[in-house]
Image (tube, rainbow, N blue to C red):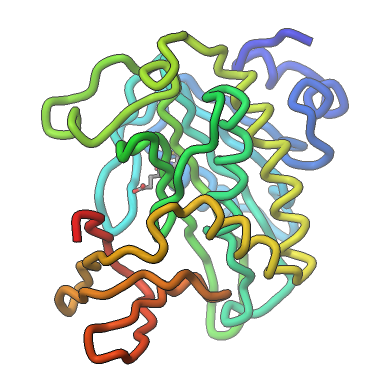
Length: 272
Ligand code: BTN
């Protein structure tokens, strides 16, 4: 069925899931022409409502964000009518310390969902960017709400540059889109459907506790493993050979003295 992003919200649940090609992701769907941040909106809604509302799989999508959030306090510039900005809610039944590697699963899902539109798989960059020819195509922001040892919910936010043809001067050298990669405009709800269908498969696997295939899939998309790189962290830069990621999402680096260091957070500089 051919439906546009706002129209998906007017369908009943069964028709919407059929249009998206999913079983549960998008069961509850909220479209907004403009919002500050879909992550902020969904987290606040989850905190404001009682019990299990909104449910696992609730999805919020906006055409434009005025304060899109990126990792490490950065912003995600979100102009209208071009790209995909969405967030969905998960309620994993586990404590925060045993949360499965959702960021890794998200990166694999987006890569799989974008591959048919790009004609080849994008590259994953640690911790969870999607690159095309070294330029950023998509980003993921996973935000966990927990109190003491109780996990309340997780919001997974995704920004995909779909049809954007020009970027602000400060990011023009670093960003790309599906359109720039292929030379063709793509239909946003088709990209959304293929990405969400891939998300469901990847999430079901990791939420069921099967993480090894997801780690292997992630590393299969990381063509820079084995190379030397620098990771900039809050406590300084670390240089070493990239060995891969582990189930906690940590990057494993072999340092010059032969020791292996696990890096939990930072930004990778691929140029050595
Ligand atoms: C990053 O690479 O820094 C993560 C970017 C995540 C952006 C998406 S857009 C939809 C969702 N809502 C937000 O405010 N951020 C995420």
